[in-house]
Each structure stands twice: as C-alpha cells, then as structure tokens.
Amino acid sequence: MITPRLYTPYQTAVITAPRPRRENVLKFQPLRISDIPTLRPYLNQAYGRTCDLTVGGTFMWTDYFDYSFCIIKDTLFIKGVTEDDVTRPAFSIPVGKMSLDESVRLLRDHCRREGIELIFSAVPEVFVAPLKALGAKKVEKLEDWNDYLYDAQALATLSGKKLNKKRNHVNRFQAEHPDYKFEPLTPELLPEVKKFFAASELPLSKPAIADVEHDQVMLVLDNLDLYGFEGAVLSTPENGIVAFTLGEVKGDTLYTHIEKMNHEVTGAGETVNKLFAAMMTARHPEVLYINREEDCGDPGLRHAKESYHPLELLAKYNVTF
Image 1 (tube, rainbow, N blue to C red):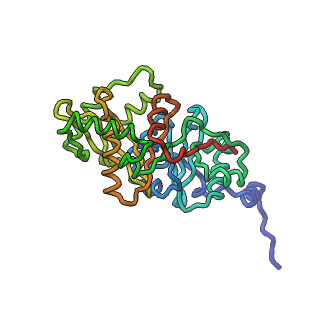
Image 2: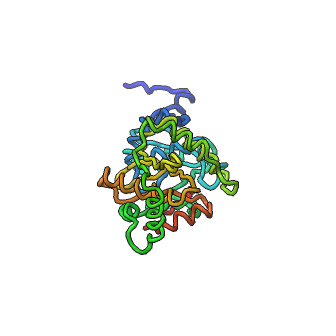
Image 3: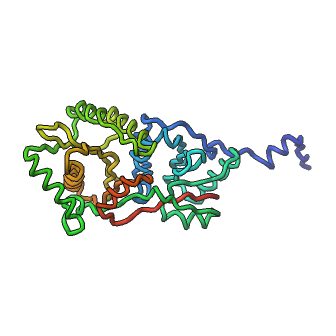
C-alpha cells in the first residue's frame, strides 16, 4: 500500500501555480553605443525598409526615445516611448527567431507586471494586420513619421524631367567650382568634418528635435568606427568642406542618416546627394532603394524630401493592445 504524500498549503501553491521560468522574464537594460556589435546582427535581419530598426535609426535616438533592450531566445526586444509622445512607454517590433505570437505574449505578460499598456510604435504597415489578429485593439498612423523611399538609380543619375531642377543645381555647382573634390570620409578627414559641423548653426525655425539630432551627429563622428557608417565629403578650394553625408546599407536599401551642407553654396546639397548615391550604388550593387528618413513635421524638410519625388512614403503606426 502506497502512503499518500502530504503537502502543506504553501507546497500546494507552489505546485499548482509555478513561478514563470526566469528565461521567459524580460529584463531590460539601458542601450549604449557599446552595444552596437551585439545588436547589429539582429537589426540587420529586421524586416522592411523603414529606418527605425537600423543601427543609425536605433542608436542615434537612444537618449531621445529612452531605449533599453533585452535578448531572449535569440530575439531582440527594444523598449522606449512612442514616436509621437515621449511620455508613453512603447516597444519596437521584436526581431529574431521567436514567433510574433510568442513575443507578443511575453510582452503582454511584461506589461501586466509593469502596469502599463502594450503599445508598439513605429510599426511598419506589414505588421499591422498580424498584430490585429493577435488582439491589438487600436491602430494610429504616425502622420509626421513616414519614411521617404527613393529609387537609388534615380538619385544617382538625376535623370528624367521630374529631377531636372536638381540636375541643374548640380551642373551649376560643378560649373562654378570646377576644382571641387568629392571623396570618401576617412579618419584623416574627420577633424575637418567635425570643425565644419561644429561651426554650423541651426535656424531658429527648426523644431526642438533638431537639437537632439545635432548632438547625435557629433556623437557619430566621435565614434564612427563603432557605428560602421560609410560617408563622403564634398569640398572646394575656396570654401573648404561644403557638405558631408553618412549612411548604412541594409539589404537592398541605403539609409542616409546624416546629410549636412553649407546652404550658402548653391548646389552643395544636391551635389553631395547625387554623388553619394552614385558612389554607394557602385560600391553596393545590391542597393535598389535609398531611405532618406522622416521629415518629423518640419515643413522645410518635407518640401526638400518631396522635391526628389519619392517612390513611396513608408507609413508607420502605433498599435495598442
């Protein structure tokens, strides 16, 4: 005869309601630029052509969006705030081996423990329907956060009637500065690029987010090896550096994260844009598109981006459970 085992109420509670396994509990830690090598492989496999889940789109905005991260089961989770309201906690679409279904369940459990809503921000359109199928109740389009996506060859050549004005600006710059120099950004050029950028001033009409971006550009220049961006510099004998640009390639897309120019030199912006597109498409034949990122509601920036006639505006959403 087998004697039944007796349990105290505490033991019974342990058996009937086990604690969550530690490996399934999300524990977020602050995101620092030293984490770029750890996160780069995950960011490089993120689906879609929006800029948010790239090295630049993530690490240049770590402080502004208060990013932290966690990696579980070879899947990256990023926590921050919504793009349109920095007071609302939010998450990026997880990236890695875990299914969307399982990752959403983990985040719902995490949000219950934290007493917050589960909100995904900067969600590419392709993920909206799958998230709704998993129980999302509210979808809001982020009107000022569309990414501008262009045909790479169109920007590299400026051919066609639509880009005639841009082509004329480049031709004028080259005619007025026949001895101009366009060259890849190297460590030797960095001191002069920093000096050029430090001397530039933001117009008073720019939104506050422009100040954040200004500081982040200098941080990138100070840590260029870590970011791994490719760049180029445009200069003339009489003016020195008149423009520079930096970007990264992910899949079939070049993401132009930084482009700065001397606005008093006619055609400097159009010229560095065209020559960088030509340099990068020659260096990376797989590049078919160029993402020149959002306008953040800045009317001047919106006009500038629209004037290059994008192929598509990549919509992004807040999705709430």
